[in-house]
Length: 184
Image (cartoon, rainbow, N blue to C red; front, side, top):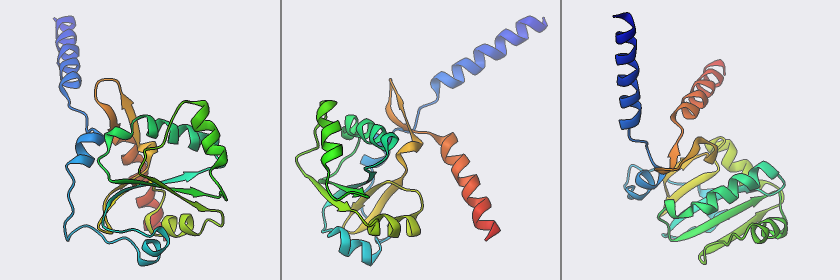
């Protein structure tokens, strides 16, 4: 009897895990629309990024970091998960985009036609963004309002759903950030 009960529990857990719908980045980002409740981007950043009223996908790319490039190429492979008018890449720590272009070409990746690259050799943009928004490297901005922000390390790729938000990673980061903020 105990064995039958264990098998039933396993079957119920298996069904529950299979029927659980993932939170896809595609579904989440593409249903977002601008409203007055969205936070305005910082004025200094707005000036440095030269934003207009388009829907921007802003990606902060640390050019000298090999792990960051791998994450960036993964992001580019799945760029269709986002609805945007223009991709804006901030290449932190870079005077040019030569190294990234080399790796893009080597991996047969291309940037969307509507891409603008801003080099940030003195980390000015990067530092301001980090001080205001924390460890975020992806922003969805429209009419100078932030619709969505996250770190792409919080995404994982699911063969069935595409990019999904890794809820466990976000919970760990939130717990860590809450401990840090409460100690200040």
